Amino acid sequence: MRKARALAISTALAATLTLSVTTAPAAQAESIRYVYWYQSDCYYGGNFGIQAGWWTTFRCAYQYFGPNSPTWVLWA
Image (cartoon, rainbow, N blue to C red):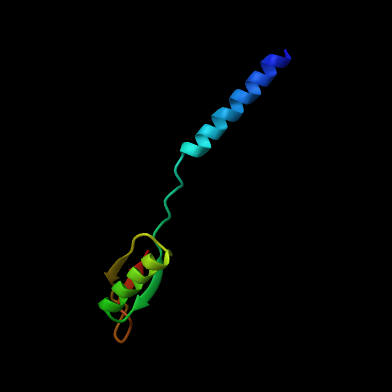
């Protein structure tokens, strides 16, 4: 009985370890990181964030907020 219990526990631990090692982490959802006046500043900020290791991808999107307001949104 002891051997069967030890075998069952070691099998369960091995299966749990295998699952935890092989599963990939969930992807993070995009969020707004900053809002810029100029498109070039948005791309500069996005590339800086990649070089600093803050995110792996980014996109700059034009968005109209109204007159006299920043228009480029950095998503990462």
